[in-house]
Image 1 (tube, rainbow, N blue to C red):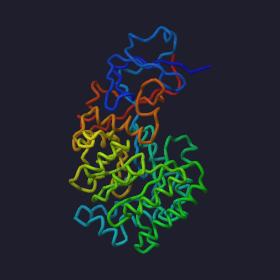
Image 2 (tube, helix red, strand yellow; image 1 turned 30 degrees about the vertical axis):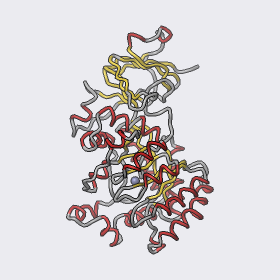
Image 3 (spheres, rainbow, N blue to C red; image 1 turned 180 degrees about the vertical axis):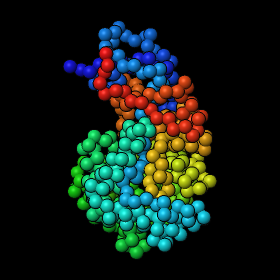
Image 4 (cartoon, protein in one colour; image 1 turned 135 degrees about the vertical axis):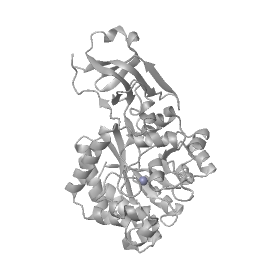
Length: 406
Ligand SMILES: [Zn+2]
């Protein structure tokens, strides 16, 4: 028998409309009918069809309902943290200087290589719980702190175990997150090893775990040509590209993402106008990460408004990672999206729900129209704009109860 229930007593319901790029529905005194965990009907409670008259009710407690957040860019699994270098960073020591001393990402790579599978899974589950408490119902999670075959494989195995435990996540292979210390700065040889050796072995050893692949295309790391070589190898293995692009300088990352038919190009603080047009034409989602701009103390915010004007479906993400954005809080990103990227509230929330889900190719997440997974957040506020307006408030959503009280 199917499980039917109706969520009632809502102050209102807010959802993007998946049929129109930036349109949203804002329904006062709403109800939401759910069958077997999927949305079947939404509208005003007074308009609920008669077929639902005898279905069990779930009391929304006068809350506002929204779709759950989708986070399309995280580096969920890593060992250790980087509090040790934090004060030096504040005193003006650059990210590049710390890396030259063997700190920065090198420190995280050492800690990750030293972490067991069980330690990675335990840390990952605690972080996923923190994301979920803050309203994130699905996220993308990258490997990339191994920079060698064995550790990248262990990260994939940890993600597979987290999925077995029921966590909703997509995995991206990122063994080209930085130059591996073993290659002594030879990016060409490093890119060749990733493309010819590591990717095929990682996919064969962990079938069905990774959906996407990623490369840090940046000055002093991997060139666009080296990135292209790795992405083509990934595509041949069935992995869809997502590109760390134009983060610290312009490297043609957005253009490369469009050329490859990538699902997303991420960061983009130094994206060109041609790159924006190319992403719009190729349906590449720009995934903007304003928490990283904040945490690195940079002043170049990604040109979100110009991207929207160019026709792009902009998404927002946390970039959760130990070096440049140790933030697992979607409300912080929503606030930065409004206050620094100058998105309207509706645009920022759409960027963290519908467009984020689309960049991960999930049509049933990021909205509450019929067919969507009923991943509903209930917010105890009078007006949803309070989530951004009360800028320091740690709002936490409620979720639909697992069982229906009749
Ligand atoms: Zn990242």
